[in-house]
Length: 83
Image 1: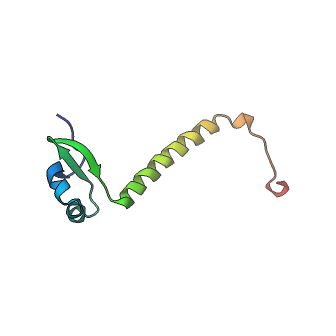
Image 2: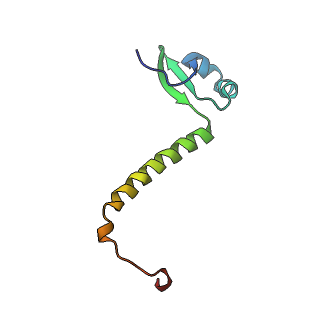
Image 3: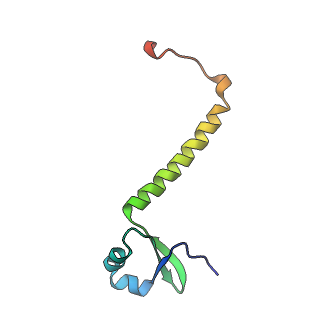
């Protein structure tokens, strides 16, 4: 059985009848739209989507920072006033 990663669910047929109503009733909560009792997609508010993208970006940057820390011996010291 597939795990549904949302407390709110709606069938595809109900969603197709009035997606704006589903969005309005959900508020800021994510909604799993089900097709044959499996999650077809998740509907999320724009601010939550932005937060998710920012979190992904932060994780990518963190791994880049960690990788570059291992290369500290190759770093060149510069004087910011001379740039």
